[in-house]
Image (cartoon, rainbow, N blue to C red; front, side, top):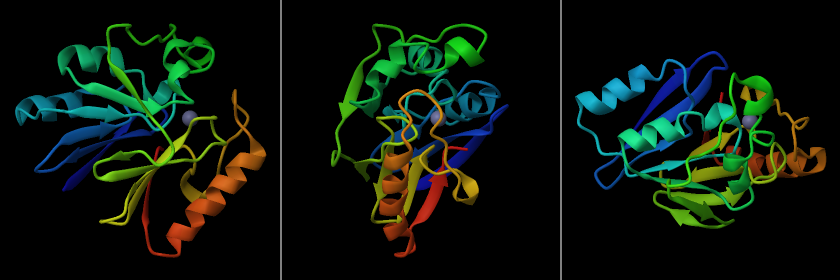
Length: 189
Ligand SMILES: [Zn+2]
């Protein structure tokens, strides 16, 4: 399994492209400087099987409409954040982006629950940044994709809609147990 990181400006949001012998998938999808990722996929003729979204903020989902129209694939998001995909106030595009993002209705979205398995990940709900934020645990390789549950330098953010101070502390406490077991963090920024 091979993981590549694409850092996408201006918020330094990260998209992760994971290639394996079984499936290829992307974790989170932002928009600017997207060409590098798209070029790589086209050059290598890579089939993307699915996209997993760690939470519904616009800087993790903005390229979904365009990407899925070019590379037909399924989109997965936690059941508690699914409505962010269709609500520009919740996904913040209404305030912080030049245009309102709403996921195209024809795109197939599947929801993840706490404890869902999506190879190679176990999904854990880690609410706090948003109500439906998830972390993706790859136990075999000891990797965790944390989205915005944890920012670099152990920072977090709860001042956005559905954010919750109490829940983020609880979620990060849960995460810290895995760090003691030497899991590696792949953050959303
Ligand atoms: Zn966020």
